[in-house]
Length: 327
Image (cartoon, rainbow, N blue to C red; front, side, top):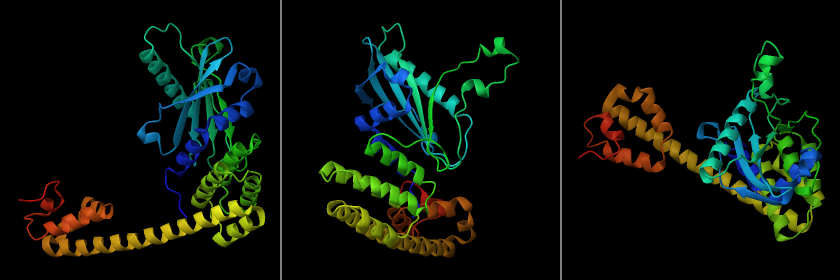
């Protein structure tokens, strides 16, 4: 099964929007000298996002406000990087987001005389193993005096690619999240699936736990390439009755959805083929235009129906594809 582009974004946001999981991540993966200054039980998620549309395919973000020791305010900014290739310049992009966060805070609190602390956290689960490059690693300076002019900051970077040595730790929920991120780039590994199901076994059987089971299974179904019967056998051997029933019910729903989507895709392809033949018969070689071919391939069923109705009355092929029906 091919994962939709936003499956990683959906999974990450669903998990890390839960304050207890985000707080546990901070507790487990940031230095103790930092976390002791943060009142993690005060973490509050912000609705703001700073990843622009053109970057949303490879990045997701979450911003948390948190109180600090002494009554101050801090921000924890999670940048989730799910590229399949190495990007040396992530820190530069992170710096831009941090500046945008500070500018937003200035607009929101015009009388403020200081900026809040931002702790940047990068969560990476791409294909190749990698380490974090800081701004100072990206700028070439002839000596230390010149290097002093380079903006620089610490960032928390965790690599959950399959070959990385990052330890998976924390609560069961956090370990499930990190284990799924690692398994995604090892899609044929039954061992990874077994590890995840053994963690699911340790969850309770209440409604919240069963919802978490469903979330994990959806992500695995969208990212792992393992025969469904193998996964169902693992579920029977490792999970309680309630959890197993949740997995089986969801597996059947996803199967039926896949069949339906395949059927609809076939119907849509048939409509595209018929319309293409009609256009070629009416307008000749004009239909060979690459832009028109692409428009046909990306059309919805409603658009295809509308264009088919216009063929008899249209004077030119452009009349078919105009936003308004021809007079």
